[in-house]
Amino acid sequence: MSKRHGAKIYVQLLLDPNRAELVEEIATANGVRPTALMRDLIYDQLKHLLPASVYNKAEAQDAVLWKESVKNRVEGRYKKQYMEKQVNKVLEELKTDQT
Image (cartoon, rainbow, N blue to C red):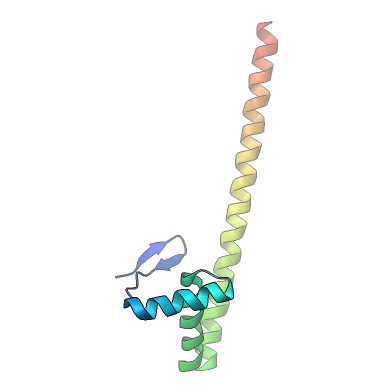
C-alpha cells in the first residue's frame, strides 16, 4: 500500500538481490541514487505504455504541484527568517530597556 509523503506518494519496493545489485551498479555508473534511477525507469515505462495525452497531462499536473511545493517552502523559510529577526529585535530592545 502506498503512503503520502507531502504531495508525493511513497511506495516501498522489494527487489531480488541480484537484480537489485544491477540497479545499484547502473545508478552508481550514472551518478544517481538507486531510488532516482528506479523512479526514472518507472516514468519511462509509463510514458511508453500510456497514450501521450494521458502521460503528458499527468506530467504537467505534477509539474504544477512541484512548483507549488517549492513556492510554499520558500515562503515558509522567508516567514521563519522574518519571525526570527522580529524576535531578535524585540529581545535587543528588552536588553536595551533593562540597562
